[in-house]
Length: 541
Image 1 (cartoon, one colour):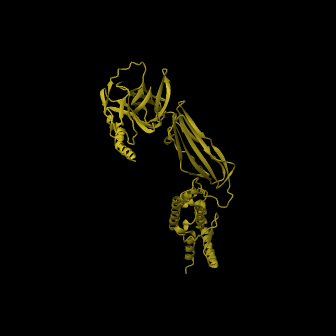
Image 2 (cartoon, rainbow, N blue to C red; image 1 turned 135 degrees about the vertical axis):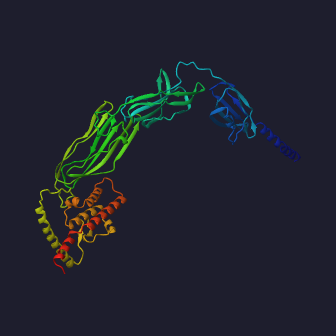
Image 3 (cartoon, rainbow, N blue to C red; image 1 turned 120 degrees about the vertical axis):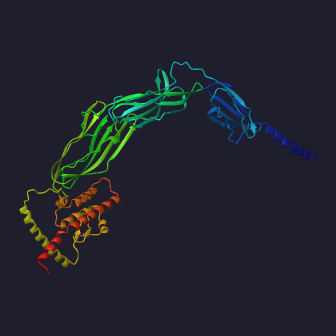
């Protein structure tokens, strides 16, 4: 029993000594791969701790005044020796000296364990006598004699041997050109004088905005290369370029949009299966495509109205694609033609002059003319046609026409009063497209709120019926009520649009139509009211 107590007491006395011995075994060592290096060579520094740590390790920022830190990494190992765990931590740093001479690397500290200070001598590098270029830049254009606003591809390339550590290029500034970057830092390899160079490439599309001599200034690149375990700082400068920009050729039509391109095409998309009837519609999409032009340079597609039909156009769509070979673009627009008279209607040829920059010649893109047969309407109510004055009517026939018309309207008014009294309800009009009834009393228009309950199609049909109740034929509306007719045409156009109109557009169109109806009604008493006034004058009470 006494012996056991003695052993236990000795164990407690030795524990602090063992702990002190383990702490004193912790070391931090620093080592350089070489004590002397040439300027531009990399210095590899290793710092080793024979223990594991949860801290961030040595503070290498103290080296940044004399060295550029290229890379750093840390690793740790854990081993068990004689049943005891043993760990190590290693930090490796790649340094590039910023100056020549002897540079001191200070001591590092990790968990109160300190390494020794080191020094390295950096020697000046002798000038190389190589018979080849380590780096160089080139600049070239697709043509040195473009036309004004013609696409010119400007290509800038940096060639180098080794590994590029860092670099920056001047931001290109192109005076007197519109420019768009097509390729940014495309990288590849190529053989030059039997040497494999790495290449960085930039490509721009340039559009000269005036004729004459235009200059593209040289571009500069600054960087650092890693070659043969050395960092070489370098500067490269491209060549400058001069372009002789030609004006628009005199042979190009003066009234046409100037289009210098490698290719221009006009395309159309429609379906014509046979004859049409008056009131039918024809949808036609016209597309303009160009290679070597921006979308902003293209004119809008054109589908002009002709005698016998009206044309409604949707908003123009455009697209543009950029690639290493340049820019291709296009514009497209949907049109709807509404046929208004029967007969054979020829859709005129569409032509577009453009200048082929490949062959240096004038060319014409075209859509051929097409004849379409339009048959008479198969329904009772035909669409509104353009009003044309009848030059054959004489003043005598006109004078005869009005008394007859006045008597007719008076009779109609009396019949209307009789029907009103007999049925005991207002006259109602049935919409021929939907079973919706509205008051057609020419002396009392519906409110705006009531008018908005009608659809666009119903509003158009209601107006046509209301106009006819005033005693006017539909064909007379363009002449007698031009403002009302224009608003009606806008309402008609909403029915033929490829895209559904927004609710805001519908509300605005409805309000404009209602305002036009109200204005005309207030400025022109209805024919039935005129007839009533004439009867009252003949038979005073």
